[in-house]
Length: 116
Length: 116
DNA sequence: TTAATATCTGAACAGATGCTCATATGTTAA
DNA sequence: TTAACATATGAGCATCTGTTCAGATATTAA
Image (cartoon, rainbow over all chains, first blue to last red; front, side):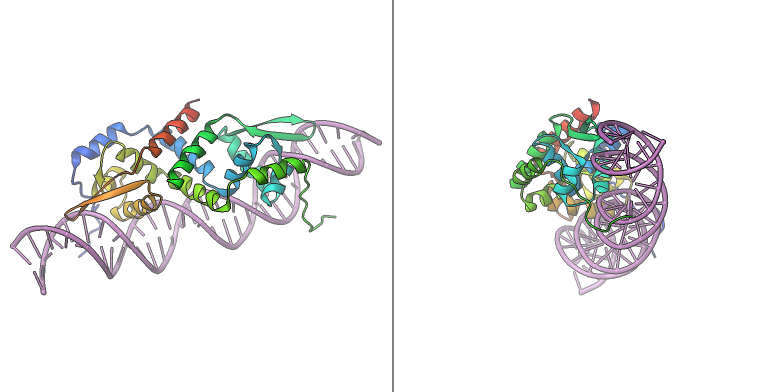
């Protein structure tokens, strides 16, 4: 007969405790997850790769990606919240750019891993 | 009256073309996205952080995360497919470990970004 | 072989996600 | 102010995702 109790067994109690002690804070794990989520989407990743070439406006990005300007704007919002991109206004046009070099560093390491 | 046509305007044709030329291949964008997706989940990220301390079996990880062994197994499968983790068998127990240092490098850069 | 343990796998379901559509905001020029 | 353009935002919806549950596979010992 199956039980409704927690079935978790622990083979190596010491290792579990060691992991608990070494783990980052809940807040940092949460922030890290949100950060990687920002990179874990084709549209957002393409936006970041495009901006690597220089600043672009929302219209340009929409044309580049082949999706609506609204969709791009939604994604840029998330990238802004993660401070991955920043913008400057020139009249009615907003020019987006990469905030810093972190994205490039991350993509570089990731490509290293993928290309083995 | 609204139109059903594509409303995409292109302000800077040259920049869009430049981005198209510089963008990675479809396959690499796809792989990169899958790779970052693997990091973009609390459970998987915690597994990777735990394994940073040394190898652990599925039971240990389930206890550490507070989720079922089945759930851990599903996540480990994804991490294996991304070659982020590897395992070795010792009798009926599978010990998982980080495949290489790439995860640590990525987390380091990400934390740098988050902590500003 | 049989029983016990450790892990894996497929189905199903709740919650998250990314898009489109309609609309709102903000800027510039007339 | 009004009109036109560029971008942002909220709602709604189809799809994706992570979990649990039930059952399968694999190893070891009796």
